[in-house]
Image 1 (cartoon, rainbow, N blue to C red):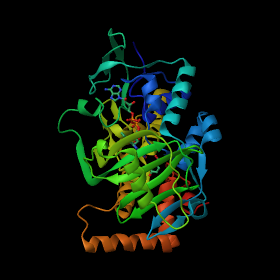
Image 2: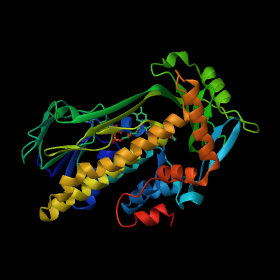
Image 3: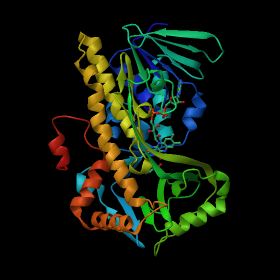
Image 4: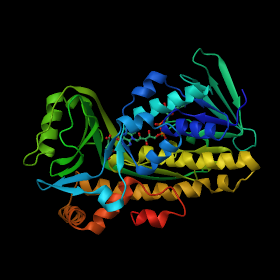
Length: 401
Ligand code: FAD
Ligand code: DHB
């Protein structure tokens, strides 16, 4: 099989890249090692930044998002038994949309299938070859076990943190930056109406808790737990009791309901530089991971492939290589901004297991500052709603115009 771009992975990064390339008239093949059912059910992120929503709209894949997505104009910081609302729209003129990642994936899979261009599920043994030449290739096994091979101009490594693309780069080429946090998130999806119209980030003395949602009938909730926490230690009753304690304020009632899904996710910061090796371009979680608190992971994946699609389109149109050459540096600027914001939000609302009294006082000072100062709240807000992708309008964006 011959194509312009072999895309490894059908997460938000791979699927969005495939769609953007299609819109530019560029052919690609998407290879995914899981089944369609699996990727459409995998529960992960839920917050779409303003620029992500705009891009999905521009690409014609936002019909259901516009119908079912929940537009939020603020988030709540809860500490010391009180709520402090950060008015995202008042502070920035922009909003976020709560819409599950698996819904984005469903919409993008449907869009891909509608184009008639190839997307192969349940492939195995994906291997990348000749990345340092002008004629790279990818070998794999089809779902029925038969061998497959794709010859291409570019390989897009969109296969997440555990994928095969990043490890295909020779030892010593990529520089790794890493930070681990001394906690993880236990996440649950509950068949219960949200208990509050907005997201609540609760910095409680027993640890962090987050109230989010997926629909008027489904609540998404997270609890700070130890990094190696066994799920078996968290029967349903214990989860609800702990959420109840950490989210308690006067006048607030936590709606309970049957748990649909439960999982534990590690908190990690990870970046590789550069995000390119020869004809391999890394995008999304394959190149970087942020701790979940800032809700940036999926949004960064989308921002990467927006840039990659534009660079490949410029090359396909008139042989331009400057955008391909600038891809890594341009992405990394946004990645590090998001990395800092995510680290900052994470540190502000979590209780470190080894908290010393001095750092705890600093943490509380920061919470009070964000709650009291419009300048501090606005800094949180403009990062949270998503910084502009690039370019001329940045000043206007920061001014909230
Ligand atoms: P992925 O979504 O990981 O997609 C990669 C795809 O590649 C997958 O479909 C995978 O099956 C496929 N793949 C892997 N290896 C191969 C291979 N060898 N061959 C072919 N295909 C392969 N972010 C938030 O903002 N909030 C959250 O609450 C949140 N929760 C998360 C929970 C978990 C358990 C995880 C893992 C991530 C979470 N994230 C969260 C992060 C966010 O979901 C990711 O940043 C986002 O999925 C990145 O998209 P991606 O397309 O780069 O990678
Ligand atoms: C959700 C996840 C996040 O990481 C976050 O910061 C806010 C909301 C969610 O899954 O809804």
